[in-house]
Length: 131
Image 1: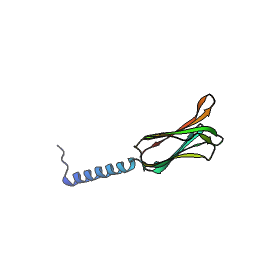
Image 2: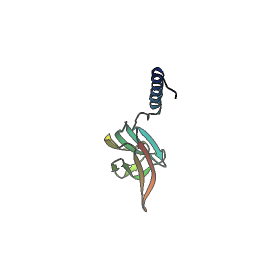
Image 3: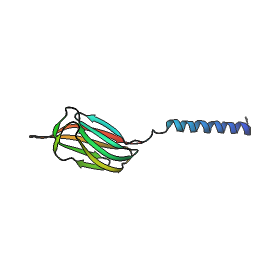
Image 4: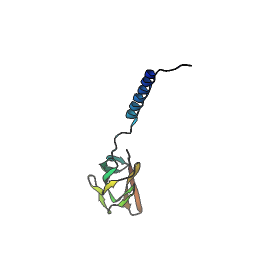
C-alpha cells in the first residue's frame, strides 16, 4: 500500500486548488452588457444600457428603408408601439426603459409599413440581454 507523506499531500492539494482557481478565471462569463444593435431587412434596433440595466431601446430604418407605418418594440416585459408616421433614415422611435431586464431576455423591433391592403412587415431585428 502506497502512502503519501504530509508534505506531498499538501503540495498535491495546493496544485489542485491552483488549477481549479485558474480554470474558474478563464471560463467565467464575459462582462455583462445590455448595449447592442443590429438590423434585419429594413428595421434596426439599438439597446442602450450596461449589464442587465436597459436605459432605452430604439427602432429605426436602414439606409433607403423609409416607410409610413409604425414600430413595435417587445420582449423582456416590454410592449410598445410607436405613433403611425413617416419613418426615414436617422429618425428613431425610442422607448425609455430605465430598469433591469431578465437575463437572456430577447428584445425585438418590428417595422410595419401601412399599405392600402393592410400591414407589411419591414423587418424584425432582435438583441439578447445577457451576462
